Length: 66
Image (cartoon, rainbow, N blue to C red):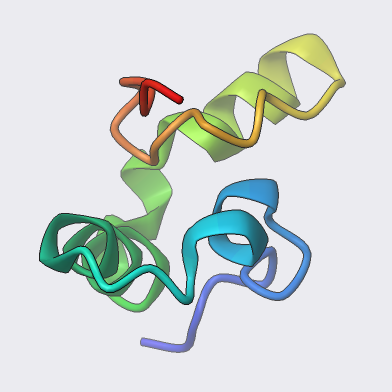
């Protein structure tokens, strides 16, 4: 499966892509580069609300505490 079409403009990916955290990289690999992208809570939030979620919202819907 191709990468998520939102990958390059996703606030979460742009903000955390260079993180050395294995968890963050795991979320990006799992939700943005596999068939699981259809389960991305960020994508669903945008479709439902018409606005982008906060950058610290992970693809599973949880938030990274800043």
